[in-house]
Image 1 (cartoon, rainbow, N blue to C red):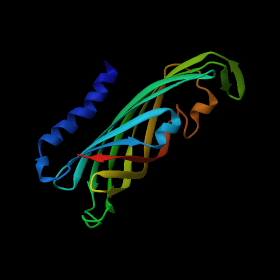
Image 2: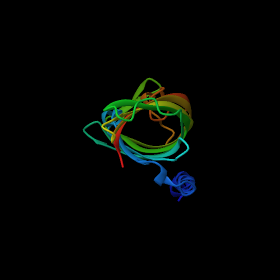
Image 3: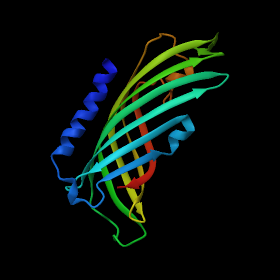
Length: 202
C-alpha cells in the first residue's frame, strides 16, 4: 500500500499538468526513450516525456531490475518524475541532426531492490557466509541539467547530469560493505547522477 501511494504521488501531478495545456500546439508533443547505461546494471529503463507549448515538459520514468546467477539474485523496480524547463531551440528545423535544446529541472525518484548474496559478503571487513538477503527502499531528489539532440525529426538522444540527496532504508540491519559506498545499493547522502537515453517522438 505504501509503494502504491508513493507512485500515485508521482503520477497524479503529471496527469493534472498535462490537462492544463493543449498538446496540439506542438508537432510532436510526446517522446518515448530507453536508457542506455542501465543495460549494464541489469535494468530495463524507460522514460515518457510530454512537451507543453510553453517550453516545459513532464517526464515519467520507470525501470525493472533482474539478475540471477551463481553469486547473487536481484529483483527490483523504480519510478520517478521530472519537471523540465527548456531554454529554446538551438538548431534549424531542416537539419538532419541538430542540437534541439538544453534544459534543467527537479527530479524525484523511488527505487525498490530485493538482493540476495548467495555466497556471502563482507561486513565490517569480515566475511559472512550466505545466503544473505536484504530489501532496500531508496528515495531521492535533486536537479538535472541536460541536452537533447534530434535526428531525422523523430529520433531523440537525451543526455543529462546532475545530483541531489538520497536516503536508503534497509529492512535487514546486515548491510554488506559494498552496498554503502557512493554508488552502492544502500548509500544515503549527496550523490551525482547522469543519464543517456534514446528514443522517438510521436
